[in-house]
Length: 194
Image (cartoon, rainbow, N blue to C red; front, side):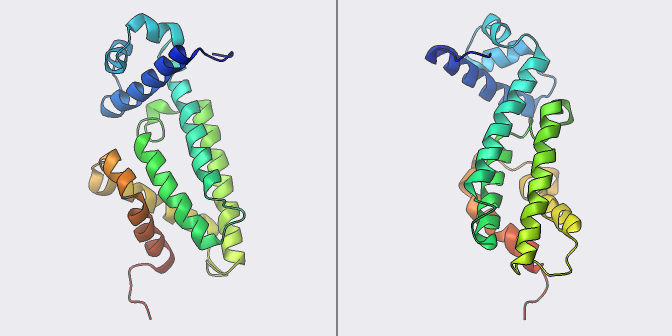
């Protein structure tokens, strides 16, 4: 898929990727035929675009990475006031991760590209937390590695609380409210404020 696709071919690829994410999130062992059926295309169309299941998963990872990086860039982590950036990136990440439940959260979706995604995100989050600490949003003695772990745990809990995945559409519609709750919990905890 090195050269640009015609508009109809691009639509087919997009439909296949969207269907694959939905189907694999429900059943990670789903067949290429099930994905084709959900996408509304012939099985041969899926195989023409993706040589095998691994190629499809790698394409999912590339698409998820692009959207996740756009979501992070949209938060202006390096220039916006830290509290604004933290809230915005949290809402954006909740929206993206809810849409990419298989690709960004299932061990079968682990590819070299997903490893790169998480490596870049981990490094970027530590840089952001260091800036937030320097600008007074985080305590001067806060352990930034621990802060990152707590933040990630809160994001995961917001998406999968109690072991049950939240409905992706519900997460997208309520991402700002969830982000407010998550950021408040992250920064202030659940004890009395005074």
